[in-house]
Amino acid sequence: MTKFFLKCFLITTVLFLGILVGIQMASNNIVKMTGDERYSTATIIKPNEVASTEVVEEIEKLTSHDLEEKQEKLEQIETFNLFSQMGDKLSDALNKLFSNLLSKITNTVANVLT
Image (cartoon, rainbow, N blue to C red):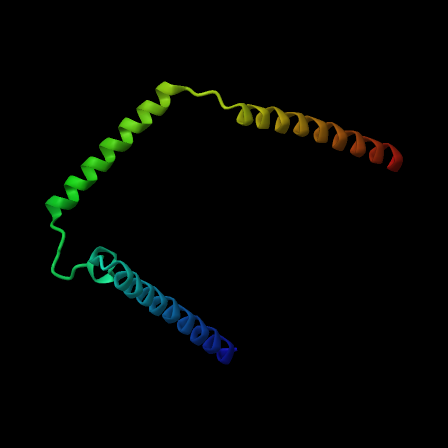
C-alpha cells in the first residue's frame, strides 16, 4: 500500500513540476515573440512588494462596497427569466406526476399483499 501511495505521489509531483516548467517556458517564449515584459512571470510577483495592512483594508472596503452596490442593482432590476420559470413549472409538474405514480404503485402493491 505504501508503494502505491509513493508512486502516486511521485507521479503527481512530476506532473505538477512539468506544468510549472511549461508555464515558465510559455511565458519566456511570449516575451521573446512580443518583446513586451509585462507578459513575463517575473513581473507577476515582485518580491520587494509587501502589502501593508492599510492597502489590504482599503481593498476590502472597496470590494465590499462594490458588492453591496451590485446586489442592490440586481434587486432593483427584477428581471424575467423565461427558462427559469419554465424549469420551475416543469419540475413541479414532474414532482406531482411521480409522487402520484409512486403513491398509486404503493397502493396497488399494498392491496395485492393484503
